[in-house]
Image (cartoon, rainbow, N blue to C red; front, side):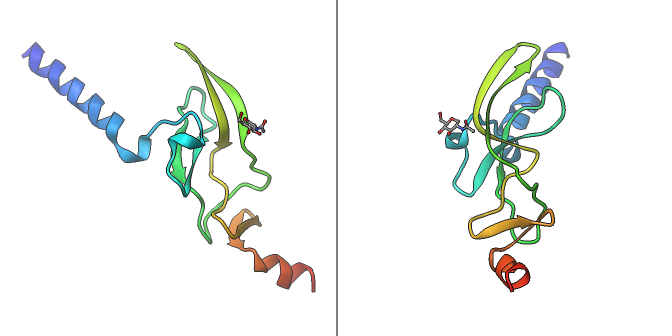
Length: 112
Ligand SMILES: *[C@@H]1O[C@H](CO)[C@@H](O)[C@H](O)[C@H]1NC(C)=O
């Protein structure tokens, strides 16, 4: 019985690791094109690949990539080009009023 429980725990742990939404990353190179490496604000959260924000999705103004060292109970992880909470907007979009918008939005509304 104990062996069975241990086996189930190992299986669940492996499934969690291979779940596509939870792929860890240490740099942009670990992520597919069209995604970026992001870490949440919570303490000890693991950086993971996330899709670039699309039109109408939330974004963070002045969200620039950082090179940083994250501290964990079991050590330090050096990460390059890491974003916080959200990826920047996809190509051709800009972050305006905390939402990804077509770049032409700026031209038609602010430069008239
Ligand atoms: C972070 O490191 C990469 C690669 O070493 C470099 O290209 C990039 O300019 C650095 N970014 C910052 C914000 O220092």
